[in-house]
Image (tube, rainbow, N blue to C red; front, side, top):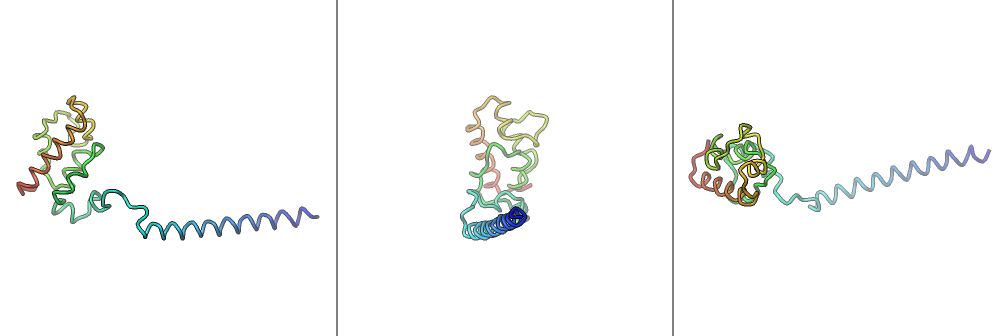
Length: 134
């Protein structure tokens, strides 16, 4: 008889505690998120492909945000570069261009990733400084 009363009450208390703790977590997470505790090191709008970024290109200072996991296609679109500009500038011979990452291109050309990335950033800077978009 005692089990018939204790188990449902215990189950109710555990479920109530779970619901209250979940609600508390959600409230705190929202407050932390809106307070800036979960900021990404790169501005979120920098590489999400928003219309403004694609139509006008990104500012010259954003070139330093290019990383080795990005593809040439991605960089071309984000910085509004001509489709084959980087292929020509960096002598990319991989048939999968522009759908390859910077890392893969540097490995296939037997160049250190850091040096290749710096050459790519300089090529993007030159193109942006020339003011001739795609």
